[in-house]
Length: 178
Image (cartoon, rainbow, N blue to C red; front, side, top):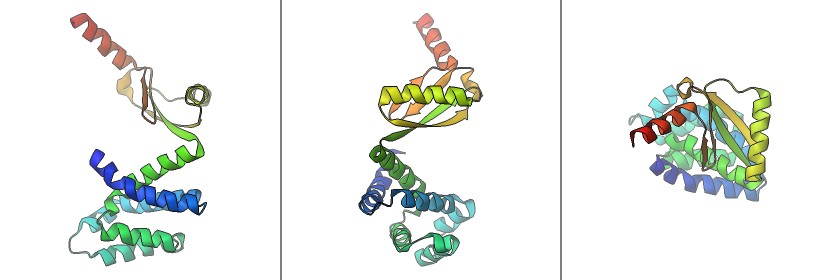
């Protein structure tokens, strides 16, 4: 996983620098979301990985699918990624770009994983607490994982807060066995 992020980072940095200089961060975010959807499609993955399909054919397919939603810079990015066999890591490039954009804009996305659905009031409460702790605007994304039994795991940047019942039970078990 670290190897893919290492490959993706220079592309994301180059796009970020270009977008920041041209004040087009939001437009590039939208472009990368579109390209992620195309690059993540199962049929497209097969085409990208097919040695019988040339880079030029893949580029033309991307451009045809995206039609008028890609500007010249977007098309150049697709060409560069295809020529360097990096189309498969477009989702990683987009993720890295979004992290850079969030840093630039003074915001952060927090992933909240809980055993049960988090309601709007709880989301606001968590966002407010994280904003106070991190000093940044916080966007909350939630998901559920029944194996946690209860509690939450919060990931924001490189910070992880594990308040799950599952982890607490594992720690108690470990301390009893030590």
